[in-house]
Image (cartoon, rainbow, N blue to C red; front, side, top):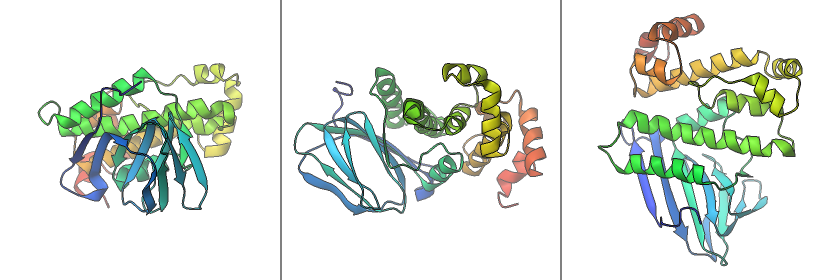
Length: 278
């Protein structure tokens, strides 16, 4: 069983100080069954909870019940009540990723974090390895600088949903929504949309028409807008300098990043960092 050697591991990071909007956390938890884990619980943070083993039931804010088992996930949306019940049968274990409201709002704006409260992603050694690697980074304060930890945590969350939407595609997830998440998953990598369409048996030109009809802009323009929106968020967090942001977001140079940012927002990245409300 995956994560078998890990029992209860929790790690948190606050940057630059203990503020709810800038909280990052992840962990592995084992829980005994037969009790209400959370009842009408409302969190100010966002949490993705992924079941490794056991069974549970999630009740969303509308009272709808969702049965959960290994490989399923549920979301604790900030400000929304929900309840969870751990089944008495089986050894319940979960892993979770928690982020502050800022990262959640950005994920919703870019349509990366889905609205549906539950979903499924098959358990794999790849996800175990990625999660454990990040957990070890968080536990060792001298091993990695805080900025990289924060960005790796955000990337893990967004990569998770990118993979889950690809899994859901056969069940009717719109191809435009799936493309949006892939376009935003890693700005350092080039996205081959022609290959994306070929694997889904969709004509590339038809896809572009569908995308523009749904989003009002081309896939390339959408990616550029999402990348610049991501840049604004990193600038607000004050965790990387301008050249590091350019590298993290896949720009060819700091000059190119600054040029595109200023063309879009009529202000340089440096001035925006000093006055985000300008």
